[in-house]
Image 1 (cartoon, rainbow, N blue to C red):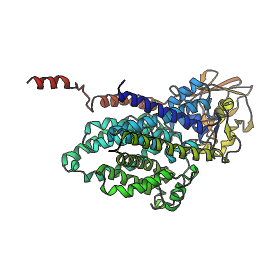
Image 2 (cartoon, rainbow, N blue to C red; image 1 turned 90 degrees about the horizontal axis):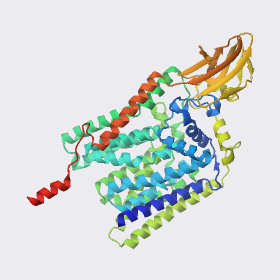
Image 3 (spheres, rainbow, N blue to C red; image 1 turned 180 degrees about the horizontal axis):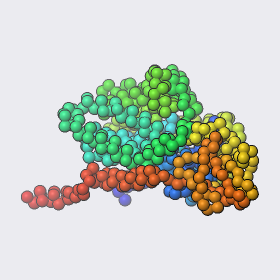
Length: 563
């Protein structure tokens, strides 16, 4: 076995062990706590509701059986592996813990792989993987905020910036890989894609300091690569964006909460004070990155250009997370979708982790192998200790969730399926949220309880009356609803509650509700699949549409020797 293969195996084992220990700290008793919010139940429900996603955008077994169409407003592509794991283990809590372990492991591997390609330095790549994955702010997303989509995005962020770096140094045939990585983030967490896009803009300006950019051809090629990337990102996410847009045009839905940007931006002084504490509820970046900022101030002035640019990006991201930016003047713009300016601590985490790993590797570059191993071990211990202390502290704190503070494995299927929430509810349904959640039917203007049955794709209620009645069924109305009575398709209206209202027939009525994808949605998804296949082909074929035969370098070298 070669030393390279042995090193890969050792790193893989370390990453796996750390991933398992991370999950054990998250759920020390095998159960999960809801920390001050129901966000974890929200994401578990998102995963569990994917059982019929290929035939219907609505799962009646989930979201309290109200017919919530969350899957059409929140991308689900990268949580689908979580659904497969849920099915394998048959338990939402156990399935989620295994899924979290897989996410952690993939983050370690992605960080190592792309930093190795960027730096060509094994120690730096390993250190970056440890520092980035075990970062304090990422731990806040995992342990406290339950920001599943946000921390899944951490897997793809190193790929985005590495492939964008390839474009900036003139390797324009790498644009398909950049487009693919960006599309993956869009299809994971659109807000992370939004903050990432903002952080890409300064890089285009800062590349002016590189001699590589001092030609018109460079800029024409860069712009052309950018246009192709944007075009394919649009095509490979259209299966999500176009159906969502169509639904929003059909019916007004409740978007996630609009939050005052100024109030959630971090005060710079408090940000640094909180960094020295081990409380992930503070939304700070931890003591390790305070040390990293000190090293940055010491070394950046004489560093390589690419690391100077990384340092500038780290400082910019940190600045954007604070109230030094006049966020109050931007409140009424599209930027209010950001909700929390401290989301910029995600790209800050990425850039400062790069810089810290670079400096540590540089300081021991000419030293013995034993010292390098010692540095790696010490960083594992320090980062792990920070996570252990902050995680243990959080596990000992009181949660604001009172009714279901702990989700036990034995009860998880029931708790997850009954959970309901009003994000992406029709706006007219919001004031009837509790009423719909309790499954109150309204028959001829009288509230009543009726027996109903559901499967993943169908909702059925049986009703008998010798006279026709007007029935308001507690199922939300979106585009794509089908209603049948006694197996015959029937018309329906939208009630004042934003729910299904039908006119029954005399006698026995078997009323069945189901959802289907619209023609526009099916066409968009089809185009999305074809575009994704084409983009993958372009990634494999160095950005060329027609097959590009790879050169036989060995034959070429042999010919040159013989000549």
